[in-house]
Length: 185
Image (cartoon, rainbow, N blue to C red; front, side, top):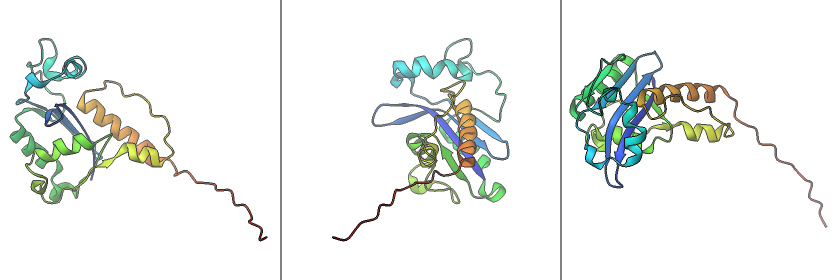
């Protein structure tokens, strides 16, 4: 089963603190989690300006109000979020997960750390995340459309899925190398 991942987070050069995480499955299921145990004191101005207003729990009254979630998921601690993710990705029920993200290095580290150390990632999970940006480069680096609702993990994960599918449908560019005949002296 293929999943597209996105997260929003606070990072200070030492720690990645998850704000939200979304996974979109190829079978149409969606998981969106906003984390309750975020250390907001470490949020920089960019996060406060660009991420917090897009959080569902921030609608109307700042970053701590949680309206009804229209998709699977909710407002959870990191520990409970990890349990929800395990159920959503369950390899026995849905098959081995293949996870894709866009510029996904930090997303992947934060995802894996929900389960502890890298060696604690649940059995059947991949040990790496495939990156859409790498696929884009491999496909000749075509311009990508902008994401509507950027900096909301679910909107971004849905965009990731759309872009990944489009890129996968493109042929790989063929390199044409000019062959010149070398004449012997």
